[in-house]
Image (tube, rainbow, N blue to C red):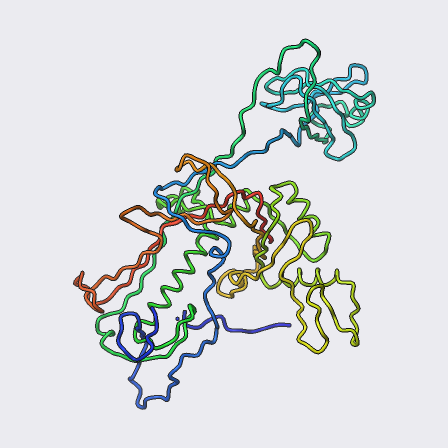
Length: 468
């Protein structure tokens, strides 16, 4: 099936309930230079429906003030110690029962018991650590056959046998009358930071145009209806700017190229997609079988194991999940019996509901369509590098806020905006000029300026998924 649909159209303050020249009800674009005045419809036709793409961050996060150019927080590290992708130092011998592993700057200590396993799952061994240097860990095995198993892995050429091993600490053992554990461990912490960016927009109309009054009846995206005169474009500028406040937090990336944005004095910021791609989980392919869901659950088990998660998806991935869940239904699907999907209890004579809003498989998953990923003028128009959806953990987490100097509960996803007692930059707007009631400039026009300074904080990015 192919479509040829226009994406264009003019890219719609507050309507007045009656035709009164209030400051918040202006519109432009009236041309009376024709020989005959055309017949016109009084009411504007809403051919694209609700054109706004924002609301995602309002659903899953919160907004709170900050007063610095840099936002910093600390996230917990792993509690237990594990190393993956390490190499056996040399041939192991059946005779001495010694295993040497190349691990640089290890925090493993003498006396701890470790499990060493081949990453191909062909051999494993438990051993006790007898020596630790800056480059290797030496351990003595417990089992009688463990060394022989690793002997089969190592070909005699250190670091060239193509086999890696994983090592994790599971306890310790000491002889009677021995001294205590040597050394101590500091709690690992992962310091994170992000910086706010300044977002601006402007609408302008000349004083002459403001002297021509015409009316159009409209219904706006925020639910208001009524009449607008020549500043209708200001209303659309405001709506577009409010969308940008969200989409900038989703798409922002740090400026790193010296002769690019960084060279222009811009720093950029870490948006949602960047934070997930660099600190979270990225999944490619389909999510159309129960095995795909099981793989997702298994990955969540290895992360924070958050009980409730929300899937914000585009239409394609939403249908994949619906079809996958429908295929798990064992009820009869005949003309006589109708089709039943779990709790829906659909009757054959009623409108059939073929969609699912949530399911449980190890964890609770709730599904919501994300308009931003479907909109043809935004992510919905991208083919290469398209994002099909994100998984966002629900609830909040505890982090150490370095500005407050104490632990604080924060939503996994939230926006910090610059503010103080004298300056609030969450969403500023002001009028400049000598028209439309403004009298602070010699400019024969009215300009409406918009500004915000904000950053998105993605806490515990390891619990997020990006579907591509």
